[in-house]
Image 1 (cartoon, rainbow, N blue to C red):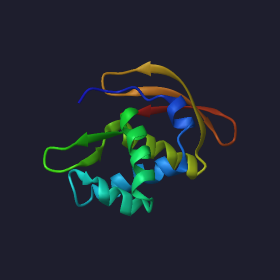
Image 2 (image 1 turned 90 degrees about the vertical axis):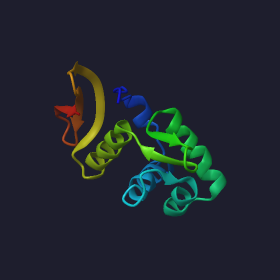
Image 3 (image 1 turned 135 degrees about the vertical axis):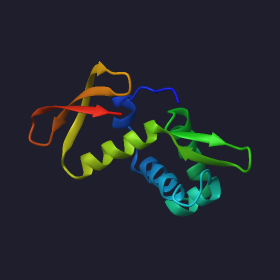
Image 4 (image 1 turned 30 degrees about the vertical axis):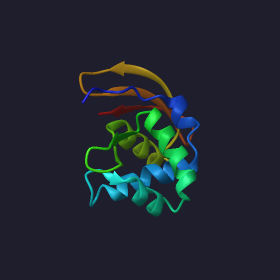
Length: 126
């Protein structure tokens, strides 16, 4: 799969509901290769109409991939996993913000991050 760039701006403005939907896709992927849209809505605990808009935003930002071959559903992209990991770091109080990209490797991107105590650190995302 081609690497899609992490955009700190997208991460900064993601709503808690969008993260709920992203987490719902991740949870659904434990039992489904492609998670049915209806199941995403159920797991996220959101009304079908409201979840559709959130799913569309996540898809537009390439955090989830749409597949309608067998049935209408989605799966997380690598970028979606990266955003969930960054959110987890943030919730645990490890990082406060993601800054500029300072390097690009063959299989990873390197970013400056700000830790909760105000120090700069480097984050490597594969």
